[in-house]
Length: 191
Image (cartoon, rainbow, N blue to C red; front, side, top):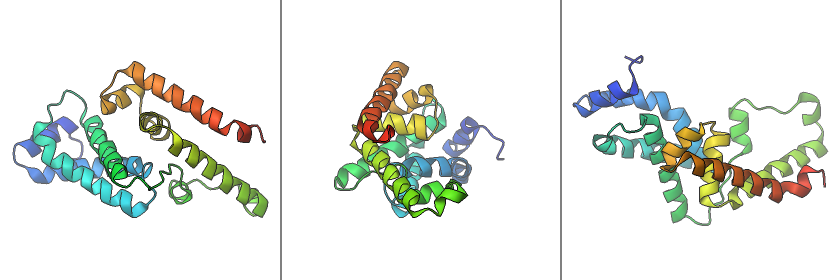
């Protein structure tokens, strides 16, 4: 069953075998959660929003026509769910590189330097600067950057998710990187 294509599973769900949707949830839950976690500052909020995105996808599945890959359609729902949530809570800061998430992903600082309090403080400050710089990007630039550079999706996949031309994605990612470079310029040079 798990070797079925997304299209085959979608057709099974559409034909009334609603339990098959669980296969899609299992396949994409970690990636959807990770994407949403890049928008919100809380593991609990990301979990709730990922669940909400899957519920929305389930009820909208009858309208899915297959003109794009299922996962790009699902990601579009997940990103829109996160953005809608943030729009309702404008005071919430968007962190994309939260320390806990880095640890969950297996990131550990070098053993010798992690014991140095000055280094630990400098690293914490650097991470906060990057989070703040990403949060300061416009929604369009931030979304393109997160999907492409953080989540590792191709430009074509991001274009599909955002429903825009690939050239627009290239431009947004390039502009986001440029704005981040400018925002972090003094800090990247050690100043």
